Length: 149
Image 1 (spheres, rainbow, N blue to C red):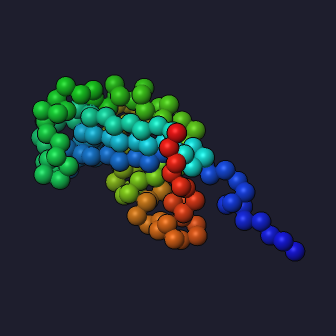
Image 2: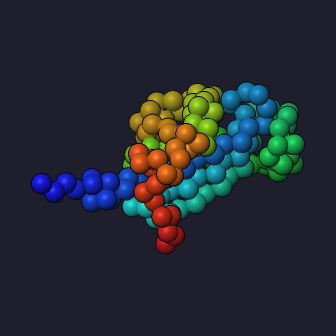
Image 3: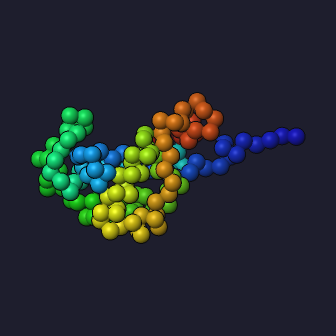
């Protein structure tokens, strides 16, 4: 009896890799966001946005290099949301290096902006990149060559 590996015969799922940077210890203090949308194993869209955090206190500049001067004129999260929705829509999951952090930042920013109901409509589950080794047979990273259009 011949068996077929389902991972090799089905198209890889659409997902979005996501990474937030925060200004301070508050999860609502997103100051930057990077997203990469992958469809059928191909990177189809990349986006980077500075975000004006709710407070001018930039505690983590020493880590990410983002200063208040860079974000002071940027849109607040609520203003950025309409640009994020199409990138997130239809994704099977969101991949993040530290999913618990990025999930908490997304939820806190949406809550502060009054967008939690919209978030629940389009945002899929998060998966943590650093727990998925490419050599692990169930890793999403093992099945994507990341070709670019």
